[in-house]
Length: 261
Image: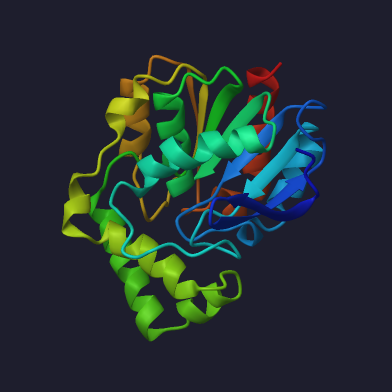
């Protein structure tokens, strides 16, 4: 498949928005960006371009179903939606774009999906993981922040802001928020899969992350047998690539050079 710089990939009845920046697979390694729970292609901003310029790799980003301009999903989302993305969508997507070697770079939910993929697939094309603000289990403070997000969506201007990026903001927000606030989601825990990851990991997290504490990092260091590097950034909240783009870019660029040398 020859990919244009942007467009849509068809997966059965689903149409998934994407952008591909720089060299295509076969010409250079590819960095695959897996977005956050309210993210999409557009919400990466200019970070993909900066990443491409700094690393020389191709950079592929897509909007998962329910986000951006991609097809909507049926609500409510199952509580296993991140497992399903890692099991059913990501491997097909990597094959469809002709992925040959590179890294998975995930943010928040996307970091969890990337970790689940690496922990359940022995994919020798993947040379490492960059996990930004990852979560591997729920924490009370994170759930409280998600409750606040629901209030902002219902009573303030969060819905209006999200409508700039998502063609169906209700599908995007309720799909994410509804799953995380389901009482059954309090038992969500993917730390078991961490022990099966066989590639190096870089964790980039803000010291002031409102959705997760350093306990998430400690779980990775405790459970993983693979090398784990950590960039803990002061004064940064849940989005290192937006709150501290230069420090985040530097950490990822240096890790990329080592992981896919």
